[in-house]
Image (cartoon, rainbow, N blue to C red; front, side, top):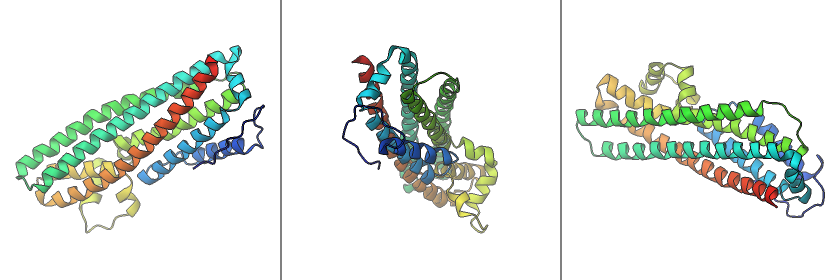
Length: 280
């Protein structure tokens, strides 16, 4: 976690100031890891993003930082940043809701599989799971569109003060971290890299040598692929494989849920600090 700096200063921190250096370091690390595609790497980036927002909150406590935000000539940019932060919080909420929905469906399906129901009944439950996933993907697609909209806003150049520039950089990096989160939940990125049934084949045929990274690249998509294969093959002997993939999926979901919840709280705190600065 980022170190805390409680002492206040009467001036904006220079680039040599520890908190300014930490912000730069966190920004650079997150920019360098934008290609995250596994649950572990995405979780790592969420933690890094939380650290970044913690540093920014410290920066916002400096009196001259607050004065800079309150300047009339910066008001339009501050309002734009606040609008962006609200949209990013909405995206976080969508991601959390999608994870919760997927987790609940995953847990329900695991419970049903443990009861050893008949093949036709299981096939129906598998279809219900896939229907739920399809509805969730529509919400994720809309959230990705909203992210692109925010991103386009930040691509517009303008004359900004030092504080505004930092906050714009932070929101831009936040977008770059959240986009892979949404893609991971929906499985869109993985599906674009590999045909669905090619992936299923790699998952289900145990005699074939598989790369560990491919197996674990996206636990949620792996569970979905296993379910699809059971339906397509009409062979319930693969139920144990489905159970295994569902368990892995649930674990990855829990990790992402925790990361998004912590990040959301940190983003809300930063937003409140900015609002307080301009309302003084």
